[in-house]
Image 1 (tube, rainbow, N blue to C red):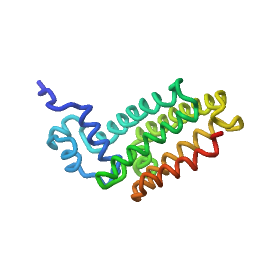
Image 2 (image 1 turned 45 degrees about the vertical axis):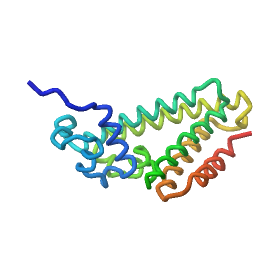
Image 3 (image 1 turned 180 degrees about the horizontal axis):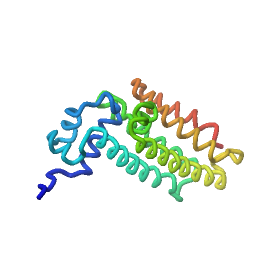
Image 4 (image 1 turned 60 degrees about the vertical axis):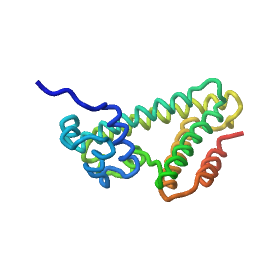
Length: 200
């Protein structure tokens, strides 16, 4: 009979995702993952088999967690469409502000994975997760933009799908720029400049 796990799987996935999102797959060692998760190597591999499997599970968890947070913001009917976009940007900038206090950018598993084609080639599940995340994220952003066109906070001529890709690109750019140690106010200015094309 297998022994029961002596750790919280969700907490482990949170911890390793936090490591992967900053350093990426290739630059993160198993030892660093064990240290971040607070578990022994044998326990980690008994549960997740390999570093590759752990990455896929952590990416799934990361996408689900961040997706739920984004959905709660972008479907908030008490906010105008423009306010929803700004609120999403505020979350990103605040994450980067907190991470900067620890001497690094907050990072993003999605951005890191998109910038690592070899990672997608070695496991087709990574590609499927990223493609699903992009569809769901752009759909939510497009919905917020449609709401903004109706309430007048976003220019009427804005194409929701194009606007969604613009916002997604701005956020990805913020993540990369933060890794280069840009300060919070610079990130906020970049974001607002990027959004300006959509707003009244």
